[in-house]
Length: 144
Image (cartoon, rainbow, N blue to C red; front, side, top):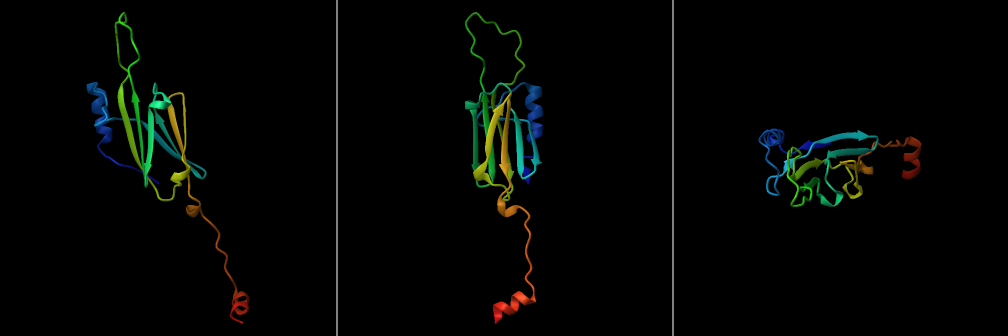
């Protein structure tokens, strides 16, 4: 149901992690994601620790879901001297191709404890359904 859009994304993430570079709007860092099915709903969970919900942007165009977020540095006064800074800052992004069987009109988004969770229901037309079979008696009544 889901497809990763860039096979080199993981290599970019590792390089950024090792080099200490931060994501920019033109070349954002990747955000970790889990994807699973829970009954008739697909769930996507993105790790965004320290990102406020108003700094997250979610777009769907056709079947392309794009999640972008920005973690800004904490406001510091003139007397603050940074001793260690290991938490990545900058722009994070992830694009996911959604199957046509998902209902993108009814996506629900919730952010809690640094995890953005999207719930995407399976479209009614994609759910299994029973097809009734008419018998010879039904056919004679219609023809007669």
